Image 1 (cartoon, rainbow over the protein chains, first blue to last red):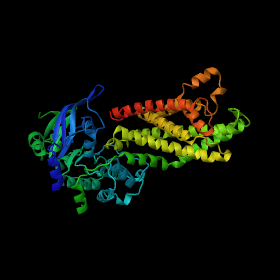
Image 2 (cartoon, each protein chain N blue to C red):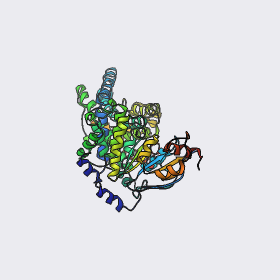
Image 3 (cartoon, one colour):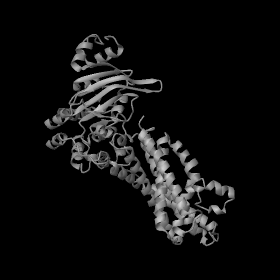
Image 4 (tube, rainbow over the protein chains, first blue to last red):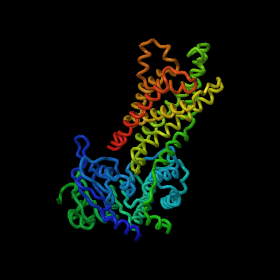
Length: 261
Length: 266
C-alpha cells in the first residue's frame, strides 16, 4: 500500500482536478462551470438526481465527452492534451450494462488489458476474476452471463490495467444484495490500498457508509461539497419524517429541495 | 484478498506498449468467430455469379483473346475483396456503437491513428482472405494467368484499405443499421457493380465510358485485372496513381473524423 501512496503523492497533483468545466447539449446546460478537486486516496461520492450531470462529468474525465470549456486532469495529466497518461491512470465502470457478444469473459479481459498495451497480464486477470467470483465463468460467452455477472465483468475490465483512480458510475444498479456487498468489500479494499475511488449511486446509504467526502450536483452545478460528516451535521437538521436519526437521504432531499440552503 | 493481489495493486503499471496489436487481433477474431457468415457466404455468392454469368455469356471473348469466364474471375475476386473489407469495418463499428461496447476501446489510451490502423488492417485481412477463397475455388473453372503478381497484391491491398476506410466513415456516420445499409446499397454497391467487374468499359457507349472514368472503383478493378492478364482498359500506372490518391484522401478524411471524435466522442 505504501508504494502506491508514495507514487501517487510524488505526483503532487490531485487525483482528479476539474476546473471550470461547462458542457451543453443543444439548449440543455448539462454542466455549468463545475470545479472540483479530489485528493489521492479519497473515497469520493458524486451524487445528484437523474440528469444532474454526473455521467457527463465522468464522461469528460474518461475522454468520452469533450467539454465546451474548462480543464480536467487525472493525477496531473490533462484528459485531452495528455490523454494517454490520463486514461492509463483511470479505470471507469460505465453505468450501462454493455458487453461484446463475440467473446468470452477471459477474452474480454485479455483484450481490455491489451488495449492498454499490457501483455502477459494473466496472473492479475486471474486474481481479479477470482475476487469477483468470475473464475467459473471465465470461458463462458458474455451473452450467456446474468446481469449481475456482466456487471462484475465491467468492474474487472476497469481494473485490468491497475489504475490508481477508479470511477464507478452506479455500479450497483439492479444488482443483488450479495454482489453489492462483495463489490463494496473489494472496492473498499482497493481504497485502503491507496486507490482513489469516485462513486455515483442512487443508494444513498451506500454513499454514506463508504464515502469520506461528497459532492452533490443539481442541474449541472455543484450545490454541496463537504465531508460526509459535515454534510450530515450541516444539512441534516431537517428530518424528512420528523423523527429518528438524520441520514444522507435527508441531507440529499434537503439540499435538492433547497430547504436548508 | 490474497497477498498476490495486494502486491499487484501496489505496483501500478508504468510501462505500457501500444494497444494497436490487440485491437487488430480483436477485429480479426471478431470476423473469424463468425467465419461462415463473413468468409464462406461471400465466397459462395461470388461462385454463383461466376457460374451464372459464365454460363450465359459462354463463347463471348474480351480483349480479343480472353474467354468471358477468365475475364470475369479477377473482377469477382476483387469485388469480393472490396465488399468484404467495407463490411468488416462498417459492421464492426456500427455494432459496437449500437450495443455500446465501443466504450471499451474509447476508454483505452489508443490514438486515432492506432484505431484507424487496426480497423483497416483487419479489413484488408478479411478482404484478402475472402478474395483468396474465391480465387482458389475459381481455379476449378480454369486457372487464370498471373502475369504480374505484384500489381495484383498492390491493388488488392490498396482497394481493401480504401473500402475499409469507407466502411469506417460509414460506421462513424451511421447511427442506425438502415443508414449503414443505405450507404452500402446506394453508394458502395452501384460503384462496385458499375466498375467493370462484369465487362470491359470498351464495350460501353462512349458516354458511359467517360462516366466510368469518374468511378475510382473502376481503376481498382482494372489495375487488379492487369495483374492477371497484362492487359487493361487504362494504363496500370495511371490506375495506381488514381487509386493511391483516392486512398490518401479517404484515409485523411477518416483520420480527421477519428481525431475529432465525430459521433464517437460527443
